[in-house]
Amino acid sequence: MIDSRLLCLLVGCEPLSGREHPWFESESATEGVRYVLRKARVLLAVYYAYMLEYRAELIFWLLSGTLPFIVMGIWMEAAQQGAFSLSALDFARYFIAVFLIRQLSVVWVIWDFEREVLEGTLSPHLPQPIDPVWRHFAGHAAERLARIPFIAIAISVFFVLYPAAFWVPSIWQIAVFAIAAGAAFAMRFLIQYTMAISAFWIERASALFNLWSLFYIFFSGMIAPLEVFPFHVRQVVLWTPLPYLVDVPANILLGRPVNWLQMLVVYVVWGSALFAVNRWFWRRGLKQYSAMGA
Image (cartoon, rainbow, N blue to C red; front, side, top):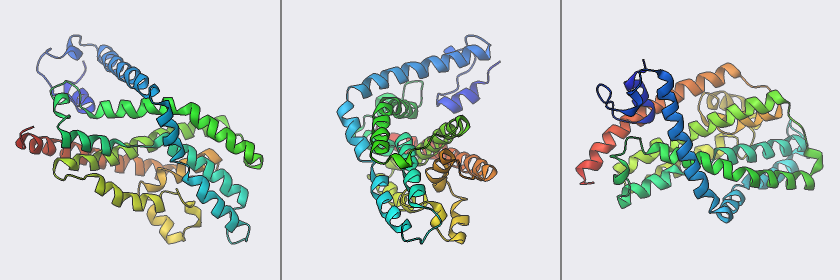
């Protein structure tokens, strides 16, 4: 028999007694899972159709994420001076992997949620039997699907212009990278959504994200591989989520060595802590939002 409290914790509904909720019309756990998957499929289909209406905007979003290509030129020039263990070709491949992981894990939920709170448009979603976060999550996931063709074109153009950097990852590397990319997206979404909930108390939750971005830019591997950092700095940063958002997934795709146990520990510990804080913030935030007359 499926546990109502567990399902409601995952999808954000209010646990009801008896069989009031459609999930519990059947005592079969399979029926409950099918219900959740059906809702997820509908949300993804709706938001995918919505994203397809903004193809031109998707291209501009894609172009706004080309910073790795700019930084790549700087590091390739530096590598030619022989000051680093990585060659110019290594830097080129690293930053194309960085470009890919950033495109697959981009998140903007803090701006959407902040606007919903400030404008009061969050209120109509609260009585519905699903946490509003799943609408944002579905929108992000659908945007990933709509963005993939443009990502493929951008990477193809890069390899045409710089064919020496072309390489073919193994099936194992691609499979593990896909998992790592999904985990990076989930972690990044959770971090940003937790910050977004502060909009219940402050008008500009995005200001917190701007502060976070300073650490993200420097220590995630976005502007430099973690390998070029001093040893002691690298050892500290590897126990934070930052390098697992960019640097580690990129290295997985490139076939470089990764500390799998440490990666698992960081994802589990930080993910669990962030989830607990997120849910606590959400409950307190709803009380604050209601007190404001929403």
